[in-house]
Every structure is written in C-alpha cells, then in structure tokens.
Length: 267
Image 1 (cartoon, rainbow, N blue to C red):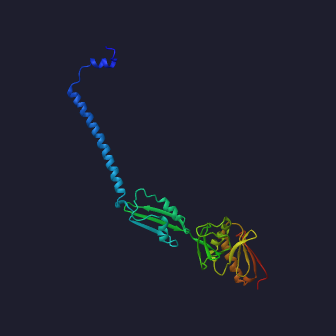
Image 2 (spheres, rainbow, N blue to C red):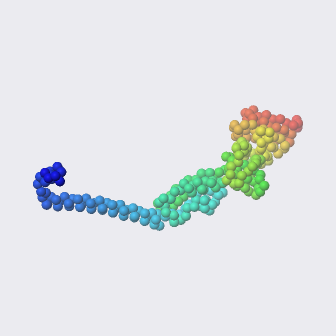
Image 3 (tube, rainbow, N blue to C red):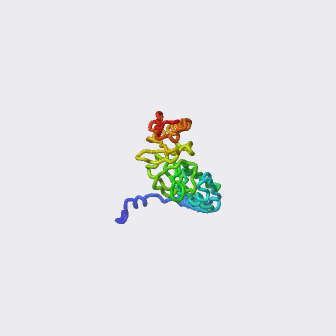
C-alpha cells in the first residue's frame, strides 16, 4: 500500500471491476428516481397554482348576501356593518369580524352566519326585546332587560316608563342600578296603560307610581312575575271597591302576602 492510499482505497483496488451493464442499470434507476421526484414536485406546484387561481376566480366568489331577521336594524345597516361585498373570494373569508361588527349594532342580540360554495353568505340576526321606555331630552329611550339602550324615539311607546339617568346613546348600557327597575318594568308590561305610572328609585326602594297618587313598594328582585300578578289582583280589588284615589300604598315585598294601606276608608 502506498503512503497516499487509505485502507478503503486499497480495498476498492482489490474488488473486481463493475460490469458496465450493471453500472448502466444503476444509473438508469437513479435517473428514474430523480425524474419521479421532479414530477411529484411539478405536480404539487401545478396543483397549488391551480388552487390559488380557482380561489381568486369568480367561481369561488361571493355572489349573494342574505340577511335574515333584524327588522328594527334594517338589512342595509346590517350589510354595511358586515362589510362583505359581492365578488369577495370565499376562500379565506373570515366571518367572525362581520359577526362582531353586526353584534355591535344597538338592536342586535345574536348573529349567526353561514356560507355555501355556491357563493351565498347568510347573516341570521336576532334582535333584543324592549321592556321599558325612559324619558330623555329628545324623546324616549327604549331599553331591553339587560340595560342596552336600543333606540330613541320622538313619541312614547306602549311600555312602562322607567325614570333613570344617565342614559347613554343607543348601543350603550345603563348603569347596574337600572336593572331592578327594568325587571319590574318587564313584569308589569301586561298592566301597562291606565293601571300603572312610572317606575323609579325612591329612598333606596323600587317604587311604582299609580295614577291615583298611590305607590307600590316593589321590594327586592325576587319573583317579579309573582309581584306583578299580586299587584294586578290588588288593583282589581281596589277598583271594584272604588278606592283607587284613596289608596296610599301597596307593599309587594312578600308577593304571597301583599299589604294595602288606604289614605281613608273606602266608600
């Protein structure tokens, strides 16, 4: 072994020469493998390019936008808030942002969205229900049971009147102290009309004013429906006995045992 050879080189020198046909076969196998790799890469590139092209083509665009529900808000405002336009590519279209934007509209309670590969996007909107009206400088603010201000109207609605301030702009929320008043108002909606007046805080208690000058002490926040039924029963009795204007106080702190205090004896 010469000084320049390694043991591996010496071992190679001792091996018999490779048959040219075998070497050619090996080279052919290597060439086929490389060809398969390049074909696979090429097909992948073509598919990605085709997929991108299709995703940007009119075949997968938004062709129609449907709004279900939302009569108070209006379809135009809902579509404007959503910001989705006809022609927007469907692939990559994230509807969570449009849902959040629609949910920020004053009347909107819940928003569901869907899309089809046929190009149709749908927003299904559920609106809030009004339970009270609050007098403000420019009209009457409508509010739902959770304290959301929905709208300001110039004329009063057929709802109980709640006295409370401050009142934010539509889309804002009343302070937490308004919630007991709104709960009482919602329960008293069936009695709205000549039977009840305004609902407000008086000396730390929820008080319902009566048209004849009497007052209803509502008590705590428990069983508002039961208290409304008890009040309707008491008022029917007072009216039957011609005592409405002589009524001083009805206490509903315990709805099962409401108490009535007249100013004078009933005739």
